[in-house]
Length: 369
Ligand SMILES: *Cc1c(COP(=O)(O)O)cnc(C)c1O
Image 1 (cartoon, rainbow, N blue to C red):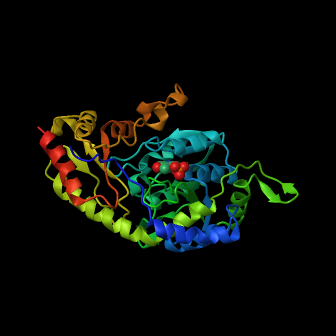
Image 2 (image 1 turned 45 degrees about the horizontal axis):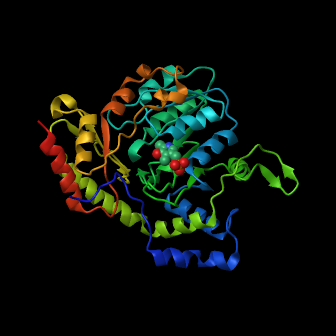
Image 3 (image 1 turned 45 degrees about the vertical axis):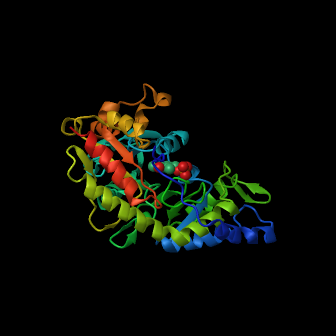
C-alpha cells in the first residue's frame, strides 16, 4: 500500500558534490592518518560547534573509550542507564565501575538532585548524556563536580549543533563526545569527536587513536586504532555545508508532530528547553497507557502494520543488558526504567515529507480510545 517509513534515513550530499570533494584524495594518495581533509574538517567543525579544541575519531564510541583512557581515570563513574550501549560499555571497558543515577521525567537527562548521594571516595567522574539532544542541567552538574573535584564528560552523541545561552553545548564540562554515525543529525558515514580545551589531553588522544605511537621509535601508550579517514572527512565537509538546512527541516517536522499530537490523550512530547537552540534529532513520545488506551509496545506493533517503523529507544536500559546480568539493579533507577518501557521514538529525517507526519499522527490518534 504505502511506502515503508523507517525511524531515520541517512543524510547524503549530492553525488557530484562528494565526487568533487574526494578528487583531491586521488591527487595526494593520502587516504588516512590525519590528512588534509581530516585537518580541514577538524578546524571547520570546531568553529561551527563553538568549541576550543577537537579531536576526530573513526566513530563516537572509540572517541569516548579513548578519552576515558587518556584521562587516566580510576574507580567509579556516575552515569545513567537510559542511553545507547556505548556509554556504559566505554566505562566498563576501561576497567571503571558505572554507578547508575536516575533520570528526570521531563527531558530524560540525569537527575541532578540524585547525583550527590551516589558520590563516594572512589568516584572520579560523571558521564551524563544529552539524551535526544535535550541538554543536561550543565550548570548544576558543574557545581557538583567542582565541589567534589570530579571530571565531567558528556555523551553528546545526540547533541550536534545544540547551543545553550549562545554557547556550543560541547564547550561545557571537561570534554564532550560527539557521534557522526550515519543515523545522527550530522554524519561522516561513521565518525566521532571529542571536544575539549586541554592541549595535553589532545596530545594523548592523538597518540592513543594511532596505537600510542609518539614518534618513529617511541610507543608510550597502549593505544588502539581509531583514526578518521579522508573519505569520512570528505563526507563530513560536504554534510557540514547542509547541516543548518537539515536542522531547519527537522524543526518544521517537529512542529507538525507537536501540532497534530497535542490533542491526543496519553501521548506526551518533551517541552522545548529554555535558552536552548535545539537540533530536533529525535521525536520521542511518552505513551501513558491508561490515558491512551494502549501501551507503548501495542502502539509500536500497530504502527508496523501501517509500514511505520518507530523505535523503542532506549530499551532495554543498559543496566539490564544480558552481558551485565546480576551486576546492577534496574529498580534503583525507577524513572529510567519507566521511560524505557513507555517511550517510542517516531520517524524523523530532513527529507521526510509533511504528509508522512500527517499519516503517522493520524494512525496514532485513530488508535487512541
Ligand atoms: C550513537 C551513540 C553513541 C556511539 O556513537 P558511534 O559513532 O555509533 O560509535 C554513543 N552514545 C549515544 C547516546 C549514541 O546515540
